[in-house]
Length: 116
Image (cartoon, rainbow, N blue to C red; front, side, top):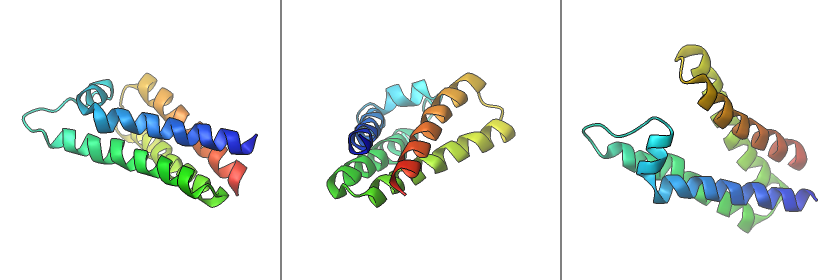
């Protein structure tokens, strides 16, 4: 059961990253980050929201070890932490932060707790 949920989490990671990698304009709009005056934001979407998560999820699947899945969880923990700090300091749209941060926190919790 743990192996199956690890694989599902890694596939979700690849899927989420795929949006940023293949559809950066859509992803930027969904995250309220539409580019203004420069396309550098699209490059950042493809890199940090896209490629990073596609490769991290793929690496966890390829390595298929508990530590690989745990490291994927730590990446999600960092993302959730960043959203939490932003919620306190930046006053972003609360609903979006709670949804995205909740998904990140749940994946972080599962991947770390199940694999360490």
